[in-house]
Structure formats: structure tokens, C-alpha cells
Length: 282
Image 1 (cartoon, rainbow, N blue to C red):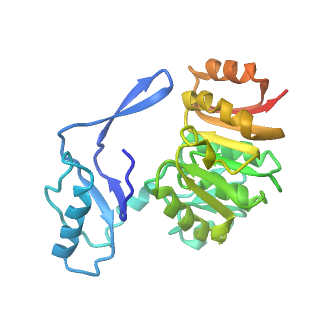
Image 2: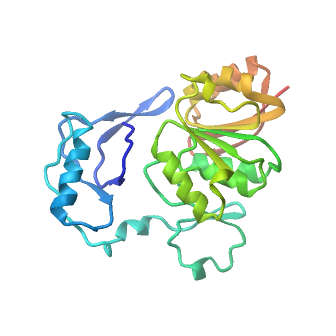
């Protein structure tokens, strides 16, 4: 379920079941179960006005979603932030914007990323492994295409490392646009550093900006295979593609598909069952 929301949304109880599939993991929406959710909005109006606007917003989701009860909670209750603390990924520290500066005084390189509804906080092994591979590369002046950009963490990192701007970030989630904008500001980068494109490049090939020297795809093994024609069409001679979100049991299929197109594995990382492959054409 992808939501174009004026609110910053979160869930204190899951509204999905996690399923193991050939491609890794999938999700099934839970039907007929109340879900406790939270949203952040400045209380500039009375609670009844906010509740009325929320009911109107939820009405757009269809008959299956309705507001049962709403409660206003003071902003000082920020215990949810405790789950997001700075982490070290290679030579870089990934930190949310509310991290006290003194806590990072000895850190040379900080990537500021706030958690949100879009994927990519930097806490998942797939994102971390791509960041590790990128730190081993020279992306200076490279044209970068980030497919499944989410929060923009990879696009922003490439921009900070001197990639040609704008870095092009594609995602199907409309919330990526605002979240990438916020994270650009946290990293003191202009909005022009990353061009956000909302849509599915498999459905609309016209979304792609042109050739890229580096393509990042952090979605899944099946999606990586489906995007192979896109990669062949878009990747510039001498370029490389980094594929992640691949579970180890589908890796052979990914390598076989890309191998037939002339790609070989140049470098790789693995975190648990998750595999990240840097591939180049022979």
C-alpha cells in the first residue's frame, strides 16, 4: 500500500504479514484488524478540527479504512526516536538529524538521514553494503541513477562524494520526494543535487533521464532481473550496476540472467541472507 500523505505516518502495530517467497520476502495486508498508528502534525488548531481533517484524509483510502478513535499526544513523548541512533558504515556515520552534535564530535564523515515512510534509513544490511561498495569506488563526476531511492540515502551519498548532479532518484512512493528534500537539507545540499522522479521505470521507460555511469537497484532479485533490459539500455560503456535486496537463494538466477547479458561480478558484500553485487560488462 503506497500512500500519498500530507502527514508523517508510522505504525505501532503491523498492518501486514511478512511472507517468505522465492524472491526474498513479500507482504500481505492484514484484513479486518484494528491498527494503532501515529502521525505528526503541529497542533495549530483544536483537536476536533484535526480529527475532522484526518477523517477526510482516511476517506480517500476506501471503505476498508476508517478512524475508530484518535488521541492527541504531547510532542515531548519522543521515545520512538530512541530506536534511531548513529551507526557506523565504513568510514561514514549515519545519523538522524536530532543527534546531539557533541555525540558526533569525533566523526569525520556524517550522513544525515531521518527515518520516514520511504525505505532507506541505513539500518538495513542491503543499504549498508551498497554504501560500503560505494566507499570503495570513485564516483566523482559519474552520472548516477538510483532506482528504488526511498529516502534518498544512496543518491545523497553519491552527491556528497562528487557524483555529477543532479543524481537521478526514482521511486514509486510519492513520499520520497518530500523525504529526499528534507534529507538534502539536513546534509546542506541544494534541492538541485538530486532530481526526484516518481513512477515505475518498468511501466514508463520515458522516466529515465538518459545514460548513467552507475546504476543502483536496491529492490529485490526478481526486480533486478526484470530491470535487466533497462540496465542494458541505460548503462553507459564502462559503467557498472550495483544490485541489492537479493536473498542468497535467488542469487544464482540473478547472476545467470546478467551473465547472459555479458555482466560479471566485480565485487560483492553479504549481510546475513542478503547479497549485494557490483556488476560490470565484460
